[in-house]
Length: 332
Ligand SMILES: O=C(O)C(=O)C[C@]1(C(=O)O)C=C[C@@H](O)C=C1
Image (cartoon, rainbow, N blue to C red; front, side, top):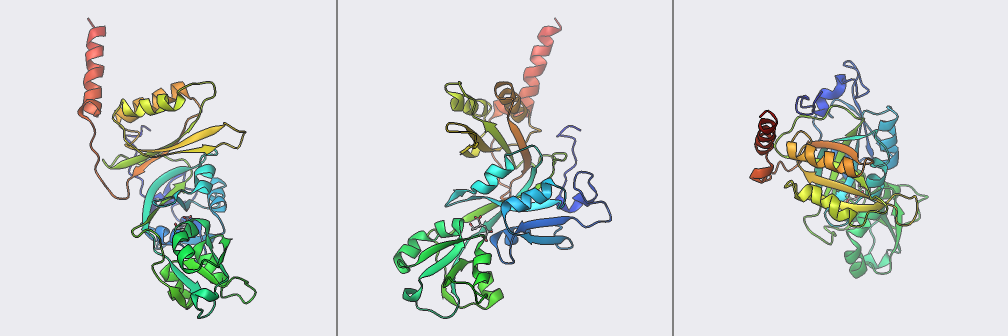
């Protein structure tokens, strides 16, 4: 099926999809980085159709993606990018590892943190504080100013760190988490709105096994993974050229080590546009000719529904006009 002809596959309609792993009578199973109260759960709750579905917390991003790969879950919601701290490397690396996953939609969650304690404590009494490393990175200036004596203990998630305080055997004094977790647990809030950057946002993605690409909405994003070719001077410039020459705007590009050795990298790239657009097809085909190891991770609707401008000479109509002109020459 061509991408353009593919139906708009909203996740709530996926239960009957042969690629979703669930049949028409089964409920789809969603997994997310838990426990209850993580920002990832807040992202999951924004996905239409999750209300009547089985939604299970798991211990890590890697576990969530593995469940989808192995077909024990239909969908995973995982964090991919934070407006302050950048890419979530566990997600970027794992999602790029093979062709068994596809991004179906993106979800944006505003981020604000509170400091909760095992009991009511003065800030200068806190010796140890736990949270997710990405959470810590977003409050580190506040921590340096207000609890400089506190040692950071990395946790699997913000909510996991906070819920750990309910356990008598936990040794740390405080945790950084979402305000909702303080409400859910009743843990005392020692400080509020402690994020270093007001208005921070984390971007999450809903991931399934590969399936037909949803139809373009006119406000879409595409994610690809491009290995950095060896012995190709100017490779990055040549990669970027494929986008710029076709008027395609990148919204994220990050280089990540492949793990195969020093100097071995791949680029994780998001750009504005949908694989059904002629300019995007042309760019992807050109990249494939240059770097056959390129991976397509999905075209999906933008969460902010922002319409982007497509330069006139790279619109589908312009591509068609060009193709017709060449065809007319061949028919002379
Ligand atoms: O620990 C959580 O609550 C998460 O959902 C993970 C996560 C992340 O990986 O960035 C999500 C949003 C916040 O930026 C901090 C942590």
